[in-house]
Image (cartoon, rainbow, N blue to C red; front, top):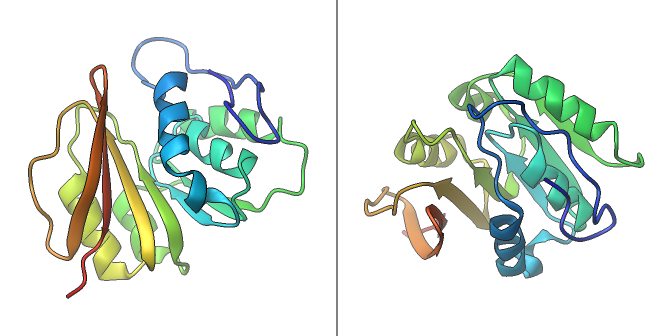
Amino acid sequence: MRIVSGKYRGMNLVEFKGNEIRPTADRVKENLFNILRNVINFSTALDLFCGSGNLGIECLSRGASYVHFNDLSKDSLKVLNQNLKKLKGGENYTVSNCDYLNCLSTINKKFDLILIDPPYKFDYVNSALTAIKKYQVLNANGIIVYEWDERYLGEVEGFKKIGERRYGRVYLTFFRLSEE
């Protein structure tokens, strides 16, 4: 697992041992950030289920002005902190250790990009999107990316699905706030 592009390009990240955690594959990440290339520079991002920090650190590498990393797992945060120590400094980020709903309810910031990449065994899309709207943490033109191992066929009030891509068994679904 490595940083694909930007100022940290090629930097190898510390990975989890075992098969319990599934980081976003480099190929999927590269395609995701090619899609988001016009969004990342100077953006604010929330990596809601950050794990090792793979996606959020890629945001920083590509010019995001701020990233909030969140994960409930203390083991994830240990790996994240090892990866953050590899950065050259000067990066603007925050780390929180709480469940995703608590994170969304206590954040006092709006984001241009929210990355939702939970463990595949849990489907958090509806509850996460509902909380994002309730706590108003997405900027008006912001984008949400949901990574999961199934195609998203539902609808969430207040959001519009703006795209979906499949990479092997991984689906990336893109949402925006709908104009009401």
